[in-house]
Image 1 (tube, rainbow, N blue to C red):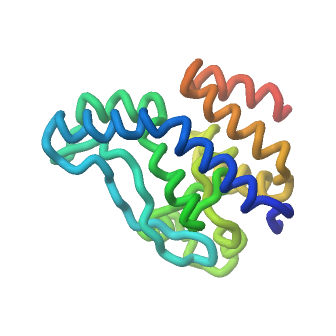
Image 2 (cartoon, one colour):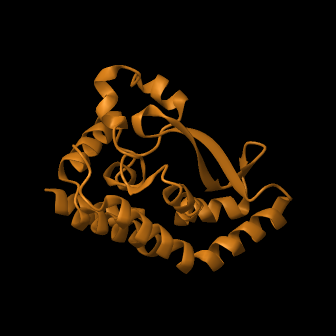
Image 3 (tube, helix red, strand yellow):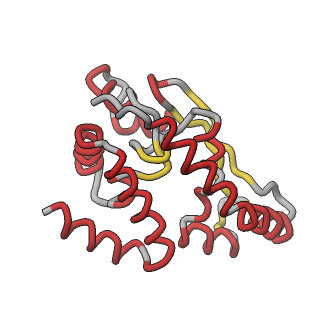
Length: 185
Protein backbone atom coordinates (compact mmCIF):
# COMPACT_ATOMS: atom_id res chain seq x y z
CA UNK A 1 0.00 0.00 0.00
CA UNK A 2 2.86 2.39 -0.66
CA UNK A 3 2.64 5.18 -3.18
CA UNK A 4 4.23 4.79 -6.58
CA UNK A 5 7.55 6.33 -7.55
CA UNK A 6 7.02 9.84 -8.82
CA UNK A 7 3.79 10.55 -6.95
CA UNK A 8 5.15 13.79 -5.48
CA UNK A 9 6.28 14.93 -8.94
CA UNK A 10 2.81 14.08 -10.28
CA UNK A 11 1.22 16.05 -7.43
CA UNK A 12 3.41 19.10 -8.02
CA UNK A 13 2.83 19.01 -11.79
CA UNK A 14 -0.95 18.77 -11.43
CA UNK A 15 -1.19 21.26 -8.54
CA UNK A 16 1.14 23.75 -10.22
CA UNK A 17 -0.77 23.51 -13.48
CA UNK A 18 -4.09 23.86 -11.65
CA UNK A 19 -2.88 26.96 -9.81
CA UNK A 20 -1.85 28.54 -13.11
CA UNK A 21 -4.93 27.51 -15.12
CA UNK A 22 -7.43 28.23 -12.35
CA UNK A 23 -5.62 31.29 -10.96
CA UNK A 24 -8.12 33.71 -12.52
CA UNK A 25 -11.05 31.58 -11.24
CA UNK A 26 -9.42 31.46 -7.81
CA UNK A 27 -9.10 35.26 -7.75
CA UNK A 28 -12.64 35.84 -9.04
CA UNK A 29 -14.16 33.45 -6.48
CA UNK A 30 -12.21 35.09 -3.68
CA UNK A 31 -13.43 38.56 -4.70
CA UNK A 32 -17.05 37.46 -5.23
CA UNK A 33 -17.09 35.62 -1.90
CA UNK A 34 -15.83 38.67 -0.02
CA UNK A 35 -18.18 41.02 -1.88
CA UNK A 36 -21.19 38.84 -1.13
CA UNK A 37 -21.04 39.24 2.62
CA UNK A 38 -17.75 40.81 3.64
CA UNK A 39 -16.43 37.60 5.19
CA UNK A 40 -13.09 35.96 4.43
CA UNK A 41 -12.69 34.19 1.09
CA UNK A 42 -11.19 31.03 2.56
CA UNK A 43 -12.45 28.58 5.13
CA UNK A 44 -9.64 26.91 7.05
CA UNK A 45 -10.36 23.69 8.90
CA UNK A 46 -8.24 21.31 10.95
CA UNK A 47 -7.91 17.90 9.29
CA UNK A 48 -5.86 14.78 9.93
CA UNK A 49 -3.20 13.96 7.38
CA UNK A 50 -0.50 11.42 6.74
CA UNK A 51 0.63 9.52 9.86
CA UNK A 52 -2.36 11.14 11.65
CA UNK A 53 -0.60 14.52 11.74
CA UNK A 54 -3.01 17.49 11.88
CA UNK A 55 -2.89 20.20 9.23
CA UNK A 56 -5.05 23.09 8.06
CA UNK A 57 -7.03 22.44 4.87
CA UNK A 58 -8.05 25.37 2.65
CA UNK A 59 -11.44 25.67 0.95
CA UNK A 60 -13.48 28.51 -0.43
CA UNK A 61 -15.93 29.55 2.25
CA UNK A 62 -19.46 28.54 1.35
CA UNK A 63 -21.35 29.32 4.57
CA UNK A 64 -22.03 32.24 6.86
CA UNK A 65 -23.72 31.95 10.24
CA UNK A 66 -24.63 28.32 9.53
CA UNK A 67 -26.34 29.11 6.21
CA UNK A 68 -25.03 28.32 2.73
CA UNK A 69 -24.39 31.52 0.79
CA UNK A 70 -25.49 32.05 -2.83
CA UNK A 71 -21.89 31.82 -4.01
CA UNK A 72 -21.44 28.87 -1.66
CA UNK A 73 -24.25 26.92 -3.33
CA UNK A 74 -22.60 27.32 -6.69
CA UNK A 75 -19.02 26.54 -5.60
CA UNK A 76 -20.18 23.42 -3.77
CA UNK A 77 -22.25 22.19 -6.70
CA UNK A 78 -19.35 22.66 -9.13
CA UNK A 79 -16.68 21.44 -6.71
CA UNK A 80 -14.78 24.71 -7.06
CA UNK A 81 -14.77 25.11 -3.27
CA UNK A 82 -11.95 22.54 -3.30
CA UNK A 83 -9.60 24.60 -5.55
CA UNK A 84 -7.59 26.10 -2.65
CA UNK A 85 -6.57 22.57 -1.66
CA UNK A 86 -4.06 22.67 -4.51
CA UNK A 87 -2.14 24.99 -2.16
CA UNK A 88 -2.17 22.18 0.42
CA UNK A 89 -0.70 19.88 -2.25
CA UNK A 90 2.06 22.39 -3.06
CA UNK A 91 2.83 22.65 0.66
CA UNK A 92 3.21 18.85 0.83
CA UNK A 93 0.27 18.30 3.21
CA UNK A 94 -1.97 16.61 0.66
CA UNK A 95 -1.78 14.65 -2.54
CA UNK A 96 -3.95 15.27 -5.58
CA UNK A 97 -5.39 11.74 -5.26
CA UNK A 98 -5.78 9.79 -2.04
CA UNK A 99 -8.15 9.09 0.84
CA UNK A 100 -10.25 12.06 1.93
CA UNK A 101 -8.75 14.13 4.78
CA UNK A 102 -10.98 13.72 7.82
CA UNK A 103 -11.58 16.00 10.77
CA UNK A 104 -10.60 14.72 14.22
CA UNK A 105 -14.33 14.66 15.01
CA UNK A 106 -15.03 12.45 11.98
CA UNK A 107 -12.35 10.01 13.07
CA UNK A 108 -13.84 9.85 16.55
CA UNK A 109 -17.40 9.46 15.21
CA UNK A 110 -16.35 6.67 12.83
CA UNK A 111 -14.35 4.87 15.51
CA UNK A 112 -11.18 5.06 13.40
CA UNK A 113 -8.90 6.02 16.33
CA UNK A 114 -7.94 2.36 16.63
CA UNK A 115 -4.47 1.41 15.29
CA UNK A 116 -6.16 -1.11 12.96
CA UNK A 117 -7.09 1.91 10.81
CA UNK A 118 -3.52 3.25 10.56
CA UNK A 119 -3.41 2.03 6.94
CA UNK A 120 -5.99 4.74 6.14
CA UNK A 121 -3.66 7.46 7.44
CA UNK A 122 -0.37 6.16 6.00
CA UNK A 123 -0.55 8.09 2.69
CA UNK A 124 -1.18 11.79 2.25
CA UNK A 125 -4.88 12.57 1.98
CA UNK A 126 -6.15 13.60 -1.43
CA UNK A 127 -8.29 16.28 -2.99
CA UNK A 128 -9.99 13.55 -4.98
CA UNK A 129 -10.14 9.78 -4.95
CA UNK A 130 -12.42 6.82 -5.41
CA UNK A 131 -14.34 7.41 -2.19
CA UNK A 132 -14.70 11.15 -2.89
CA UNK A 133 -16.07 10.54 -6.37
CA UNK A 134 -18.41 7.78 -5.19
CA UNK A 135 -19.29 9.46 -1.87
CA UNK A 136 -22.61 8.94 -0.24
CA UNK A 137 -22.47 5.15 -0.13
CA UNK A 138 -21.66 4.92 3.57
CA UNK A 139 -18.66 4.36 5.81
CA UNK A 140 -18.06 0.73 4.83
CA UNK A 141 -18.09 1.57 1.14
CA UNK A 142 -15.71 4.50 1.67
CA UNK A 143 -13.33 2.29 3.62
CA UNK A 144 -13.47 -0.36 0.87
CA UNK A 145 -12.86 2.24 -1.85
CA UNK A 146 -9.91 3.75 0.04
CA UNK A 147 -8.33 0.28 0.39
CA UNK A 148 -8.98 -0.45 -3.29
CA UNK A 149 -7.30 2.81 -4.33
CA UNK A 150 -4.29 2.21 -2.08
CA UNK A 151 -3.80 -1.29 -3.54
CA UNK A 152 -4.15 -0.16 -7.16
CA UNK A 153 -2.69 3.34 -7.12
CA UNK A 154 -0.65 4.19 -10.18
CA UNK A 155 0.01 7.22 -12.38
CA UNK A 156 -2.64 6.02 -14.84
CA UNK A 157 -5.29 5.56 -12.14
CA UNK A 158 -4.45 8.98 -10.69
CA UNK A 159 -4.80 10.58 -14.13
CA UNK A 160 -8.16 8.85 -14.62
CA UNK A 161 -9.43 10.03 -11.23
CA UNK A 162 -8.27 13.60 -11.90
CA UNK A 163 -10.02 13.53 -15.29
CA UNK A 164 -13.20 12.17 -13.70
CA UNK A 165 -13.05 14.90 -11.06
CA UNK A 166 -12.94 17.56 -13.76
CA UNK A 167 -15.76 15.75 -15.56
CA UNK A 168 -17.87 16.23 -12.42
CA UNK A 169 -17.56 19.98 -13.00
CA UNK A 170 -18.67 19.62 -16.61
CA UNK A 171 -21.34 16.90 -16.66
CA UNK A 172 -22.29 16.44 -13.02
CA UNK A 173 -21.54 14.02 -10.24
CA UNK A 174 -24.42 11.64 -11.01
CA UNK A 175 -23.26 10.94 -14.57
CA UNK A 176 -19.65 10.51 -13.48
CA UNK A 177 -20.71 8.07 -10.75
CA UNK A 178 -22.68 6.05 -13.30
CA UNK A 179 -19.64 5.92 -15.60
CA UNK A 180 -17.39 4.83 -12.72
CA UNK A 181 -19.74 2.11 -11.51
CA UNK A 182 -19.87 0.64 -15.00
CA UNK A 183 -16.06 0.63 -15.10
CA UNK A 184 -15.67 -0.97 -11.65
CA UNK A 185 -17.78 -4.02 -12.51
